[in-house]
Length: 446
Image (cartoon, rainbow, N blue to C red; front, side, top):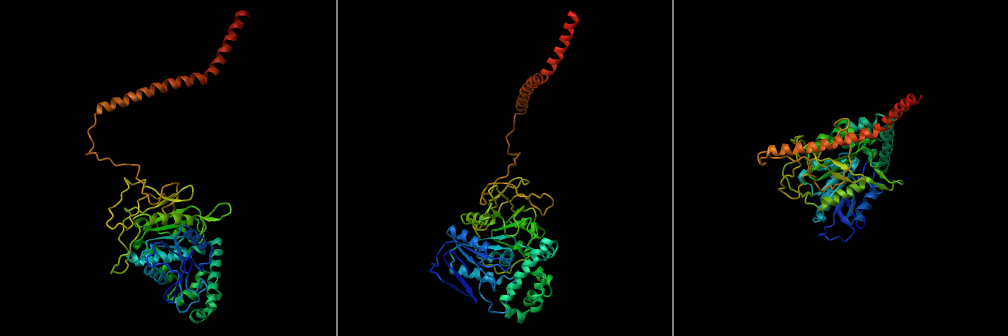
């Protein structure tokens, strides 16, 4: 694991620290879950950790099993839905630093693992907030998408090579537990999952694995403030898999979709030295930390509920992207008035109702510029008037006033029209008069 000034390591279920951080330290911790075959050495992970450390927070990267320079010591491998390692790291960090707010950021497959974990644990998670970047959401839809066109097939091949490299690093275990010859001959992620992931994870089929590990079915039970960022032009994680209605129905979730950005790209500047989503994560977490909406762990005796009764009437929050690239909340243009429910528990998130704009279908959102903070909940421009409480008006006076204003405006408009007519038509009229007078004078003196 990685941190700016401090490092923590989880090995074999044991938690150790190589620094003298006091147990009552209140410095926020950002736990990062990398994408498929990525680890703490990946450039975008380092960029996120650097920006986290720059604002004085602690960064921890939870490497997947067999990655980050640490060999696998058991017969268990990670997969797109394996949440036990994340749960162990989160609980250990919370145990070691109970007063430090814990935020989690997942990228790509890491985002899928994050959302699934949050849905499984619900109110029981000690996480104060979370961010999911470019999540695949529905692995079955993603599998169909990534083999559809040439560009997607190129990405599929590249990711497969990464998985084969991962298997090579842990070859003794894969030789014993999986189909090694099938792994070497794999030409797609699906091939690798068939010869390795399904065998090790004991899934009947690849489709069974994809259905079981997709995070979209767990969205309804997420109980912490969760920002989800996806690009509509993502070449790997298609927008077709985004659970629009489920995110809209859960008031804890803020879904931000951008027209461009690719997969974990969102590069900024001529030299592409910055990543926009890193700045968005930084703003969201800073504002969440300074607000009363951070989640507080609650011990719930019952297990996680995967299907919740929800109503689309509870419009979920969607956000805009400002001209400078920052995210901001917007009011619901179709609602009568934005309301904030009474907060029985101050730390529980009650996110804002906003309007999603669908340019070509209900699963595409165009983000319009706005510059308000995520922590602010703007009021709708349309205010509802209570007719019963309104004072009776003098109808005659009101009508007379309106007529007087209309009359004055009509007079001014009439004189303005006459003036414009004279100015614009005078050259033509003058020319005609000149011709007529010249003819008459020629006749008189001719």
